[in-house]
Image 1: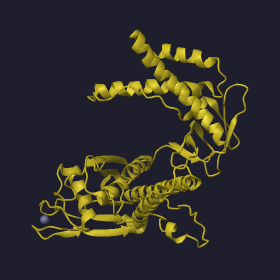
Image 2 (image 1 turned 90 degrees about the vertical axis):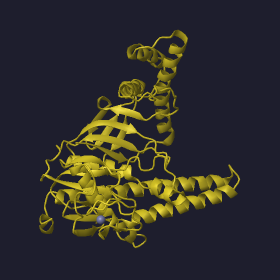
Image 3 (image 1 turned 180 degrees about the vertical axis):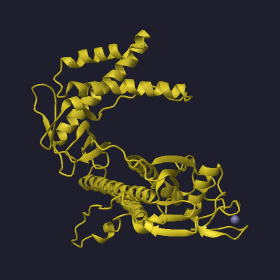
Image 4 (image 1 turned 180 degrees about the horizontal axis):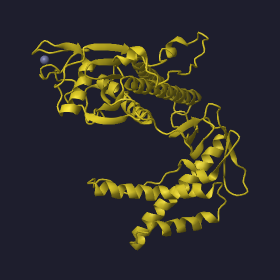
Length: 423
Ligand SMILES: [Zn+2]
């Protein structure tokens, strides 16, 4: 399986800037040359000719990059053109060919520029130049094949971490069961996962609390910044502090997203699932304005990150993830099919008197929509359990208590607990 590991970069900021600046210039050179030739001569140059022109320009300069890293920077434009053509063919006339030039671009080392020596990756920067060394942590598997290494600029923190892409040699597992479970992602409770008989509500109040706290922090920064003179020492200090705050928040939210997605996949394994039907909420905020409180809640809801994490984690366990349109799944009564918009956390049907957890109604209706094509055809599960994603409470406990924050998840996915076997 291919996995990307984010490792800290020990290179100087100026060196990283210079490398990504070179990549940006090479990539932008191709874009501007392509459009210039088309404008003046009316010729759409082929990939070969355009690369040749670019090579002629860069061959005379002393670029501290491996030849294949230069190739990758050049190929970006042609890859984007290919995507545009495919999108236009599929009926997306608004797709445009790349035209924007960029100052910086992520520098990529292909496997031909990487050598592995006793726990260290050596990246080539061209013949006769000193290699860049990355010490790999001991937690990484030893039998590995490095696919590529990227020098990525993180906008929030202003730092350059390494993104090391490794093939760890482990084949994806085969799913233990053949069942289908459904997942209803939510803003309040991150997810409800279950089948026709029982549902598990994953609760994570920490996520909401952090989201609201972060919004308040940003507001405080904006208010204070507005009172300062732009460019003053205090102003600059505040801008730096705001960036640090945003970077930390991004890191914590990413960690929580990993814990939630892990909990979803573990629950699916316990339920002997082969397919996860996942509520498709990709367009939930498109063109909708429901006031600032609702808009803030929706914009802070990182549903895409959790979905992407669930997809790759489930794939490793041999479980397929299917997206299901979730229209009317939270409004339809699972008992009589009557539709109404619930208020609060409890769904109560005015027609048949059914009352149940709002998110569990969403979960069973997603399963119903997947099985029968419409929501409201399956009765709500009778057993509802609550679960906190593994280790999320550590976030709260360890503030200033001196306890160790690092606890490794020792839960073996494949061992089926006795109580879970009856689910
Ligand atoms: Zn009803």
